[in-house]
Image (cartoon, rainbow, N blue to C red; front, side, top):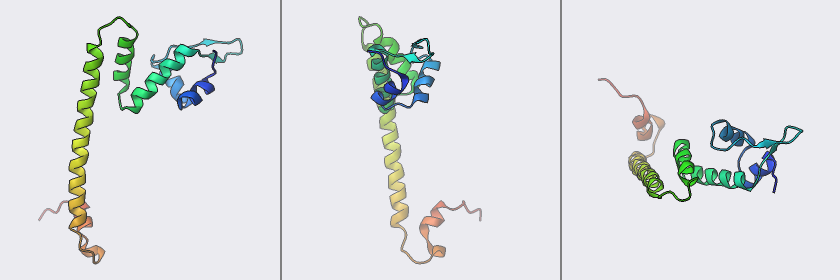
Length: 134
């Protein structure tokens, strides 16, 4: 199977510029080119791009994706390194969730403190306004 860059993009829901970027930074190998200078992609590149997209959709950084790809390229390798990267990422996700929950509580408190009235009396505007130096 031979795919164009447009077909690769459609198959993985990836913009063409993103595919080119992944090639520039070495996540995807530079493909062979036809005599008309078009890129030729195969099943291996499609699978690699799908892996990258899924990892990015799960929030892995480009450095983490690079490490995961490096580890996955050696199929006989112990998966401890992959587990470590995934667990570190899960900790990052848990921290972000905790931060968002704290933000939600704070925002809800500000909203709940508003009794209506005029903008001059609005507690939300007061909470968002500059700190007063009395």
